[in-house]
Image (cartoon, rainbow, N blue to C red):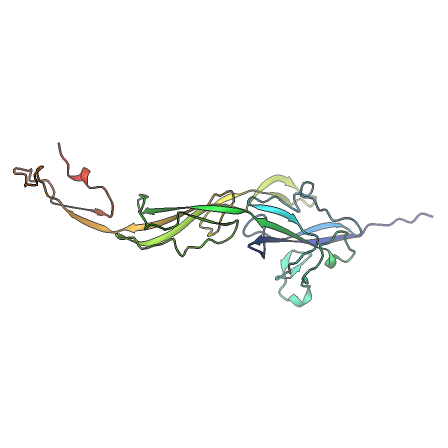
Length: 268
């Protein structure tokens, strides 16, 4: 007599977290608007894959972060998920919330709710460059001591409190930025169910408000240069008024703070 055993399909929920300044926050490896969990399908009593090199879809490499494999989690799920659909539950009481110090699964249990894996991405140090310009893109001379760069870690919001000093002749500073952040591109492949397999890739975005990867963040503070009026006097080398100047030469000029004037009044 032959007895055939069929492996029991199960799932494991992978939870992704970013570590910044000693704090853990839920993290979407493929970028804003994507999931911060992943549902792995396997079989009871088999090993849970653990190596990024052979399981890149489970543990993607993310620009600006170092992958850390966690064997004993010290984080909790703030948003209970439906492990079958990877969506938040309206009624958290129908599902589970992970307890602190829950150990990551190594051997898949027949009870899918016990299969939980915690993955932490440690944010790398980053530097942002700061530019101060007027509405035409011309540099603005800000007071001494105003920062020209900031340091932080990937994904961390940068501090704007010292980036808009008062500058005589200018007003209404506006802060914008560009940075490379976590994103995704179509790999051109599909999984067994026919779903697109996405590949992590840094993408450049505007006004993220955070430090990007690869020291890519450029913060631009744009001031509005005030309107100015300049009086024009025509004198010789001794300071005496020049007689017989053409009548059409201007006696006043208008412009904005620090805009050049000389080329508006000189004549051969």
